[in-house]
Length: 143
Image (cartoon, rainbow, N blue to C red; front, side, top):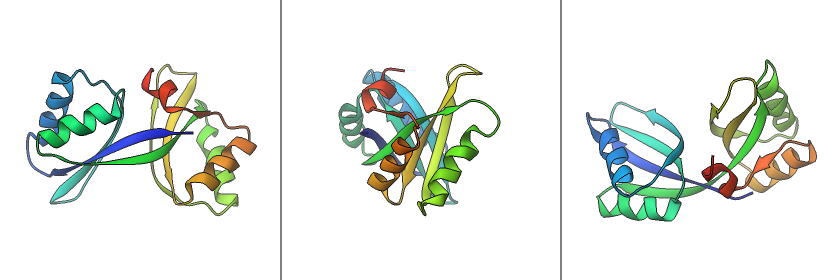
């Protein structure tokens, strides 16, 4: 289960997010999912894009600090308790969720949740044994 995410470190000032999206747009990069966390001084923009390597390169070429991280993407039933069931499975095995973000393509279908776990391989194994559908990068990038 190999999903690559890029993280961009941004100064917390007006226009920086627009600069990132503009650079990606000009390069023909499509953003599939994103999360933005900030502090008073800086933010971390996490993106799933359709071409990770190209995105990393064009952002670096434009002066951004960019890192690549492996994350896990899973399908979660879009209904009350869908996420709770997944989190209980992980909790019962002592896995820590470092962060997560989600999106729904169509209400009533499955949501896609992106996870970063403290024990990556163990988390994937536990999820698969529990029958949770994990997505490959190509599946996610093509959404």
